[in-house]
Image (cartoon, rainbow, N blue to C red; front, side, top):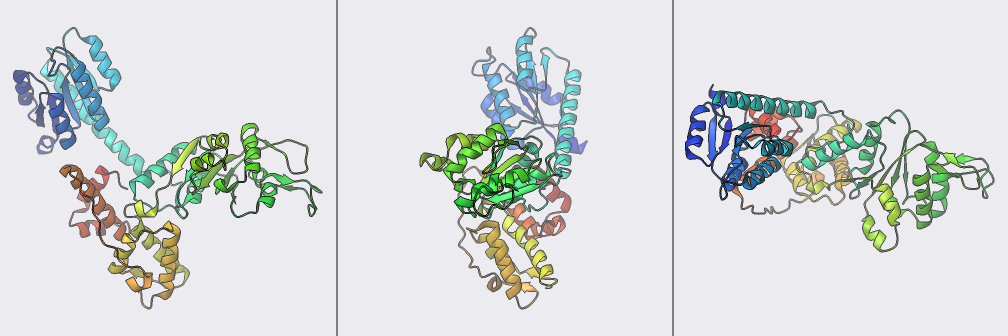
Length: 452
């Protein structure tokens, strides 16, 4: 019973007598009361109650339901998983049905039986708990299609969920991000999670091949099409038939080839250079670039119609400097990899090196960090990688002031937890010891902030 008393139940009711009755009837919960929309929203933001009972007729116009519907919409916007039970007038079935259509869990017409309302509240709590457990299990058992991606950053985890959602379809995906952020890793993840996973994944860098050769690389050529064409050779598009083709650095594709690529995307057929036969090709296209394609469109360097063909789904990768805790987490992984590769077993990052890694801006992103750790493994004299080995200087701390105290506390708490998990190399027990918490408490906090 003591655990139930810790569960908040918000009662939004402007009638003091009914409010008091409801508080008395549901004293097994931590009952919170509000008599208007603003005070109710403040309590929702502060306590995040799983269940809310709400009268639709609220001040300043208790005879109207407009304020109640505003509160319902705001509540489900702030806390979409909260179960809202609407209390309406005896002959107000239309508004009750409208409330359910907007997302309310259930409704009761006044006057109502307290026991029946209590059963509904209990069911609402049970449903809330089941949904929370389902969310946790989904996080634990999501398919590992991005096995090479190491992250705890919430934005990168959202990218992972996006990849898992779009992979099953055949839409064209455009991956945006600075150099070294892992665009090819995301493209391979799209392929691995799709129905094409058993077929070929073919990648071509549009910036690494001269314009004069790029067309033949993409579309292939017939024997005798030009000097040196001694045999018929299929292009990358044809080679990837049935699978996935990644066009890396698509922003560097010449305008002349952009038109030909657009025709392929529209018709799904190609013609080899020197050929006359149309060849149907079933291939999924994933493109990547570090450039601003919309800016290139304005400059006349990229076709707008091709951009909208390629950008059916856009995935934007944050730079490493914006990925909370990932620099330390990746560093541990790279140390293990390169220590094994160079036969330097048992190497570890010292605290001063970790602090410098966390504060460095990493303009070259993950690729720069990887090279930094590789160099440090080679240069380290013992089994401890020091600040001198990584060759970085500590930067000064710069903190933005958040004036919302609750928000500031949550932001700081989440950041510290992510940092501890990064330094502990993902070991929850060690991270809990660093934070001075029990392991179950840390698991609860990780679940609260959507960390895994």
